[in-house]
Structures are given as structure tokens and as C-alpha cells.
Length: 129
Image (cartoon, rainbow, N blue to C red):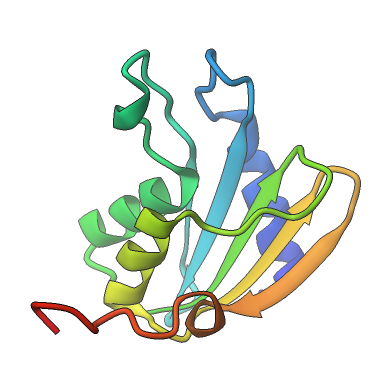
């Protein structure tokens, strides 16, 4: 599956996001090392701190299916610039794949590619790492 295919799956997942408060829908498609793909859309809550990002929804779906090894993540959003995973998502993703390849695309087609390790270089440095 190509990066472009993964982006299309993320765009489809974005359509199912639940974002009645911000109206900022995000979709994610996480490809497992096996080639299987898990998708997610952000799920907002009136108690905004309980909102779940699209990336973590995709990770949760994968873990529930018994998959914990990943090689690429695609994110799609309706923003001027491609978005990057938030800090919480970076930490969750790094638990499973610290050097994950990430492609982020806007609805207008602007694209950025990077690795999780570039965004989050020391995920295990701290009191537990």
C-alpha cells in the first residue's frame, strides 16, 4: 500500500470524526508492519480535555486487534498547513514505533513528511525511562 493510498484512507476516516465543538475533523490511517491498516477520527467531548485525537483512536483500534508494530501513519486535516501529532499522540505512538514514518496532508493537497523521532527525539527519557 502506497503513502497515497494511506492518505486516502485517512481522508475517509476524517469524514467519520466527531467534532461538534471545534468543527476541526482529523483522520488518521496507521499501517501495521503486516500491511493491515487501522483508521481513526478525532472524538471530541464537551469536557475538551477528554477529546481523543484521531491518531490515538487508530492506535487503540490496532492494539485491540492484537497489533503493536507499525511503519507508517497518514493524517488528513482541513487546515492551511499539514498538522503534526500532538504531544500525547507522539508519546503513545512512540510506545510502539519511535521512528514511525508520518505523512500529513491538508484537504487542499499540501503535504509534509517526517519521522516521529524527528518530532519527538527522546520519548523514553524521564523518570521511567
